Length: 496
Image 1 (tube, rainbow, N blue to C red):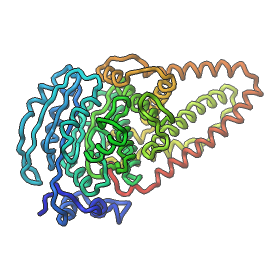
Image 2 (cartoon, helix red, strand yellow; image 1 turned 90 degrees about the vertical axis):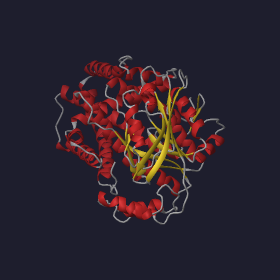
Image 3 (cartoon, rainbow, N blue to C red; image 1 turned 180 degrees about the vertical axis):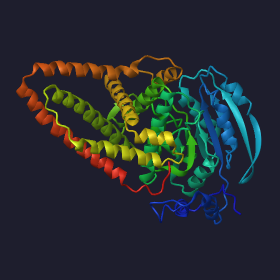
Image 4 (cartoon, rainbow, N blue to C red; image 1 turned 60 degrees about the vertical axis):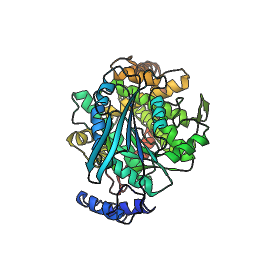
């Protein structure tokens, strides 16, 4: 039988999807038990070429997870040819623990005997943080055919590398492929932490599903677990006059590199098979700092013009989804705040009349959340309760709205902020209580509105309600129609 780590004809990806039932039966997928036989059958007719994969693991204070990450890589059916752990700015025992795995490893997998070697590099204090570690690692593996980027807290399914390589070598147009990300919620303790992880699992599921349904075009090749063609990286560097693939002037180095690879003429894809569990945020501070950094960086990429050394590219294909996300968050914010204001105003003059029609948007939203939860490969009772009860997801939406407001206010203020440092501090339990600022401001705004409302005459109050309720109603109807479209859309058998 042909070695599965070979180059494949360009129709292999379609053949794999057809073998899984995606091509002929968009509503269903073949039973899991048939996948290995179908996958290997496709590989029987492949040509012979052994690609090489160099793995980079940028690690910052990862003593709790680095051993599991390395164990996961060494248990892959397709082991990377070399693994470089690049430790930077670390104050814990990451180097000590990773060094226990340093050296050559001979492993036997389903694909036969394989060899790899693990190297641990402690580059000390590095002002460029993760970007500096990634570029240091790139200099060590640029001679390989592919660069596999793995975060220091990401543990992949045992066949993830095999699946990513299989598709990457099947089509020379592919510049990079990302795995499907989720978070393993089994080790999580504490009510708030479990709720936050459930929300992040739903967030990942919705994002992954959206990219899968868009022709598997991945807007962001996340550094958590993605494989890159080194040819594509070189072309992207040349096109942008860079000496390294990643640049330090972007808050979202993964998104910027994905844009550059796409602009260089390559495809950025998401695999329907490769899966990886990433580290989640278990505190409000940590989640807030992470999301504000990501959103702030995405705004910089979206915004027309020049900010620092990052050129705004508002019409780039990879950023269309970002624009929709931000417009959706703005709409969600408007509907919720306007509804609360109008409801309070109506109750204050005994003019509120309840209509069961207002329950329709709530019901559609719950059904959509439940359907998205059901697409998770490892959907559990907590995921279904988070989606089905309604209020856990609604509270989580308010948290996300606070990130949206803080990101845009920080961007528009043009205040210089080290979002990387703020996230690191928040993850250690430090940082300010800035994540509560949007809710404090909202409370103050509502109080001010209430004072002004009481100063208005009955005629003016009635006029405001007469105009306000129809506006909120129209926007809500449009939102509901959009949610219904997503609810009844074919998911083509994908599992996220």
